[in-house]
Image (cartoon, rainbow, N blue to C red; front, side, top):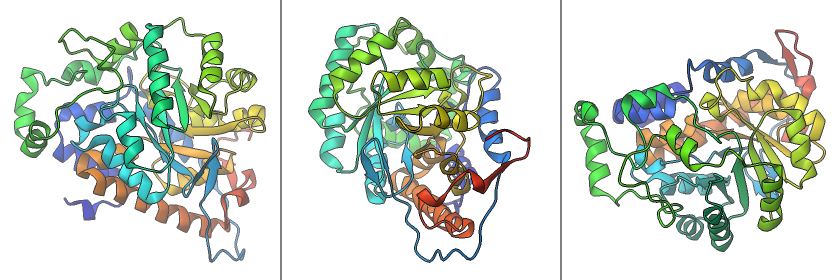
Length: 386
């Protein structure tokens, strides 16, 4: 199977599984506990039907949106994700190059493998920083100032990870930070020689946002353990309000699900929120973000930008979320499998296919621009109130 044979998320997933060791594939693919929420995210979107309009004159489609003060050419963005250079040796550099080519937002994680400054220098497209709030308040202040100095436009504070989710696939494989394969997993790595060659012959893996501040003691720590031991479970609304003031620019909370929390975010001056259950990787059994979208938009959509992620792998999935009032949709495993499979060309192909699907879908829906979409375009098979 070649990259040119990939036409959808399933194809990218299959190609990635062939090219990277199983431990890495499982980190991208897995969820918490029984992975109920991971499956539910996709199922919720599928239970919503589109109702197209015809004869609307839609020769030219405009997919552009403005979200968190940033003008994007697409209503989708590449959700920041940790450890991208483990998936592919180019990591965030490949992601950023693809995002810049398609005129959309991307970003780095606190556990990213390329520095904010390097990414900002390389790419002019809007960038965000996915910020994890650590127990070490001095580290938090230093990371915030570093993001400011780099010229990052958007601070994205993740609030659903104050302790680690039970990611059993990662426990079995030993996937963690710094990345060191378990001896028992070495035969699988041998079967994927090109990944190993690239990993060993390219720039040494590091965590630029953390290396100067966090000493992991030379041991490998699971992502779950990292969240549990390093992040601050006492983080509260006062802490976030202080960060909003200190940042002084577009600020959003990632991991909001309840309308009450969305209202509180608006009250303390957040520019936006991302409805997210961390792709089912934290608290298993949560409601799907898509199912919460209409309720949250109704509560705060006139006060801040509401975005959503979790399970979106098709253009028509994105159109459904936009019809419910989302300002933009975050892509996760959709582009990460493409990155793992083929680096920058993979992410570019994934974004190209997404753009084609969006243009086609908008034409078939009778919508020339995103603002033409509304809840009149939708029906829920289970009779949900929208």
